[in-house]
Length: 283
Length: 290
Ligand SMILES: Nc1ncnc2c1ncn2[C@@H]1O[C@H](COP(=O)(O)OP(=O)(O)O)[C@@H](O)[C@H]1O
Ligand SMILES: [Mg+2]
Image (cartoon, rainbow over all chains, first blue to last red; front, top):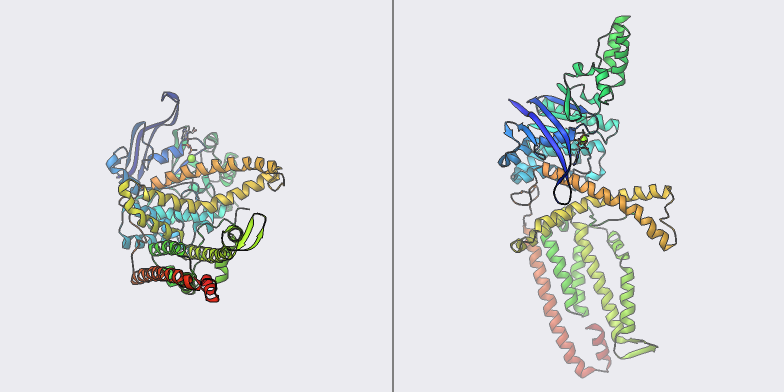
């Protein structure tokens, strides 16, 4: 079964004046349909304002569709009785690490979600330790989040979601405020979660480099799904990607230019290593 | 400039006092403070001081560190002394213009200093030995009965703990803004009051905008993690009384009993004895003691 399924999803932000009359309507999602298989690592790429965050908020029932339907693990997101089950099934990690950590101590922050679920105290302890260990943050469990690096803070946020035992984790630009080391740290953690814990990952980002390991990429543009496919299928459409204001990795660009010039290398190259291999074969 | 904000500062150490239930500490500190105001004689203060000394020894916080907190209230102390000495009515020892120094005034001033000292040290022991978290948990539990009067106790506790989490973040941000605005020529350390007030506006406006942005982000994150108020919420560290907490309550009761009986006995006794010995040396001794 699909863990996430969106069908003809439309969402409009309505701005109202003082009398409650609609002043302006902004269509942030325009007929989005998409399926995510359980256990997949999915990336959603898109420039600023393309509707990524709006879409992400639908997966957690923070926003409800204006038209169309979203199913999370078979539950309709409009079903109010299922609200907390949906939020537990599809956990959410946001961009700014400081603004999503609630606890004053790492372990207490990780416990926040399960506490809301009413998990008994003994099991809380287990869940918190397990989540912190999985993210490699156990040694910081009694520390103040303020003392951690950005990457570590995001790992705490991920642990906080993991402790709720979700089937799927949605991350809305979790690396946008991090330095390159922190970004790598977070992506590595996500890949491990996907491979070892078999948790479905939906990574929203505008850094294309971060998506090369995903099973499938969706590219959004102006509220629509503009492209979809495996990283190779998507990355080779360089001109299109640039049209959607995405920054294609330099190595892919370089290889693409070489390929266009008629040099005998694969059309799509994702990493330095691949290019080196391909070039080695030539000589 | 703002880094020194240390609200709810906590000193980590492994002691019985640290491990006490926050409710015991809250109730204890509260009753202790009240006890300092009920009677006004040296014997009672002596008993209070002994109890405090025992707690200080038990809590393993360096005394020097503890006394640092006193510096902040030194000004209030001096003010209290001067005020008491100069303006208390009584048998005048020395007079000047509208000021009159009396023996009673001096006695009041001394007692006031002792009282303030005990008050502040006892309050700081509570914050030094209790994490802000446990403190808010304790407050939430203590005030929980008020829920029947529709007082949003859980919400207040949550607000307090979030405020405590964001104070260091916002003060760091304020520091950054000050630096950025100083670089653009704002006069934060100008001697002129108008300059300083004016310079606050470019600090406060961005700080408020950022605080609101953070608040809305945080609300979203809390909602996404299934927060729906205090009902049905469990706790990683639920408050549970242990033997040491019951013992502490017993000690507290004993202390209150001692203070009340000593206070009543001595105030009666002195009043009685002073009738006979007023003016004599013994009378003077009694006056200073009780
Ligand atoms: N709260 C809001 N009110 C009105 N319009 C909004 C709101 N949030 C986003 N939008 C608009 O919706 C569009 C999509 O925004 P968003 O989903 O945040 O994009 P992304 O996350 O890809 O940057 C943008 O044009 C944005 O201006
Ligand atoms: Mg966004």
